[in-house]
Length: 208
Image (cartoon, rainbow, N blue to C red; front, side):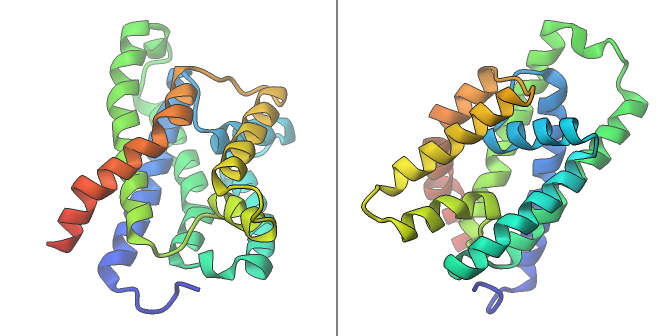
């Protein structure tokens, strides 16, 4: 487990990153260009159950983390706990807050949606990149492919990862969530982009 040897700077950055993720997802949901597979599934389930995303995501993560604890304990750390609760509840908070200052018809304009989606998507990718680079624990959702690969390493990790995300996307669609251009960007370019940012930006800044 990754609870030891984590300094205050790392913990502060982890908390900031997951809150920023929730902030970004609240806007990506508003522009309606799709979200990442995990959020697609969680939004669909939360809507069906009639509860907030934060409450559903906390419940879902608590179930997943039990499996991670028994089969991939090395993936658990402070970052795991932060992502379990702060992303979903940050989404709830910023969605509520945005209702006070964003006009109801603001996102009816395609121009407004694009102008919001582009910087928000960039910010989301940067936040995830920093979160992953800190290596202080994996979210339960992201730890599941590692767990599945550990249980059956004859299947390549990439296959498990793609299958896991694809399954969440399909389930999310069946639950009423929408896929869009952001979904496809995350599916095909998210991983390589994060890797590049980690190697060329985050790693250098962290080293300094």
